[in-house]
Image 1: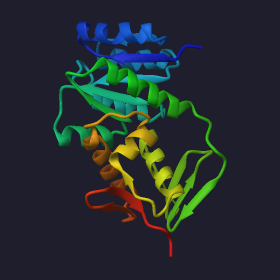
Image 2: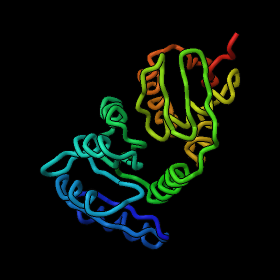
Image 3: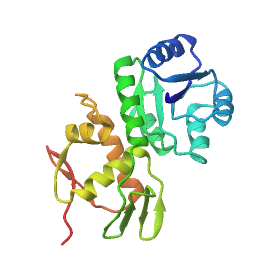
Amino acid sequence: MDKKILIIEDEAAIQKILSEPLTFAGYEVTTASDGLEGINTFHKQDFDLILLDIMLPKIDGYTVCEMIRQESQIPIILLTALDTEEDQMKGFDKLADDYITKPFSIKLVLKRVEALLRRASSDPVSGTIRYKEITLSETERRVTVSGNEVSLTHLEFEILLLFLKNAGRVFTRDDLLNLVWGYDFVGDEKGVNFHIMNLRKKLNVDYILTVRGVGYKIAKEN
């Protein structure tokens, strides 16, 4: 069955730029032209992924993302001209899975859509990992810290899972792009940094260490 993608974007030209190559790639594409229509369309059908603009009429993309996250963990990629660090951190705070700034490469969009859908549909390996105060369940895709549940995006969960399974190993930003994002895109290190920052903030424990000039790791337990 074709994967279903909802594009919420108010500019008709960008809708076309996105929908035509996605349709050609085998996806079933539906479009909405404002935030309210996007929410209503989301409720009418089952989608596998959402491409979401931020600067939308009626309801902005941040609010749309927040509303959807209250009821679904569907992968969400923000597509926007807002490119400051504060804008991107706000998007990740709303639990978006990825953030692509305009103007964008359609090849990059397709690659990220493919990678995110692959992660979202992969069968989890049964098991629970415990590391100090952190407990991670792969089957339930659930993380708790000191017994309190922490809401993570697909990417944040996969980053933490990779670190916990490989405690002591240092991962470069390129390693994380290949192993977690699922593609090799030189120059997207800023996106990795944002996700690490957000993951640290949500966990609120200082276990993800920066290895200066190399990358990140979680130290082995003593």
